[in-house]
Length: 366
Image (cartoon, rainbow, N blue to C red; front, side, top):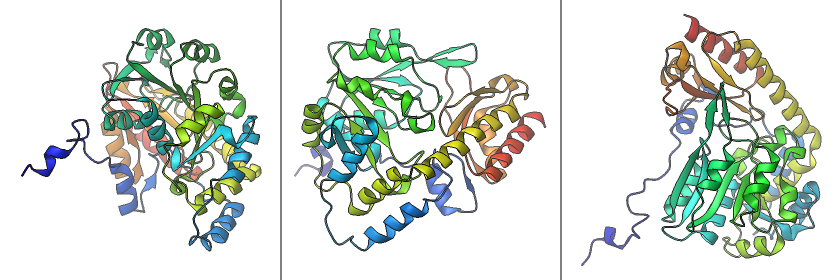
C-alpha cells in the first residue's frame, strides 16, 4: 500500500497552509491596535448593519445568483449589465477562479513586485511558474516598469496581473501602459482593490469594452470596510465572465454578504465619509513625519503607507518590533533593492494614527 502522501499532485505536495500571523496575533490580543492588514478602521454603517440583521434571519436559505447586486455593480461601473459581473468570496476567490481557468502546470504568471501575495499563492497551488518583475526604485519612488513586464512575456505566459493602485507602494500606473499590456491579448488582470480611495475615475474599467482579455477585480474589504464578510467581484466581457463563472462553486457567496454588499454599495454617504477621512489622514501622517532624517515615505492613494528607513541606519523589522512594544501592530516588509528598512502601516482611527506618528518619530530620533 502506497502512503497517502504519494497521492498528492506534485505541485501541491509540501505547500503549507497560509496563515496571517499578524491577524492571528490581533485576534488573540484585542487590546493591540490593528494597523497591519489594510482593514478599514470603522465599523459598518447603520444601513449595512440593518442589512446584516435583516438577512441574518434568512441565513437558512440558499442565496440566488446575485442578479440584483450584480446589476448594481454594473450600473456603478457603466457596463452593460449583470452578465459583465462575477461575484466571489472576497477578491481572493476571484483570483483563484480566474487562475484555474487559464493556468496549467508549468505555465507562467507575470506579477509586478512588490505586490499582493495572493497571486503567488494561487499560482503555486496550480503548479504554475511565477515570473516576478520588480518595480524600479529611483529617486525615492517605486515606479512601474511596463517595458520589463512586456519583455518578460514568453510563449508560456498565460496571465499578467498588476495592482492599481499597487499594494504596498500605493501608486498608480500610467493609463497608456495598461493599453500596451492589453494589446498583447494575454489574460490581463487589473487588481483595483483600493481604487475607491481615489474614485472610479482612476479605474481602467473602460478597457473591458475594447479588450476581451482584460479583467478588473475589486473588493468590498477596503474602502467599504467589509473585510470580515468576504465579498469581491470581477468585471469583464460577458462571454469571458460567463466562461469563468462556470468554474465557480455553487452558492460561493452567501445570502448575508450578498445583500449586505448591496446595502454598502447603495450607502454612498458612508463610503465618501470613509474615503475623505482616509485620504486626509494619509496626508497628515506624511506631513507629520516628513522631517524625520533618512525616512522615506511613499505617498499612498490607498489606506496604507509604505516606509523605507534604511538611511536612518535602523531596520524595518526593528521598527515593527518597537511598535509592538507600544501596542501597535505594523506590517513588516522583506528586504528589497539591497535595503532592509522597509515597513508598512495601515491607517487606523485618528487617535491610533497619532500614536503611530509618535511611535515612529520616537524610534528614529531616540
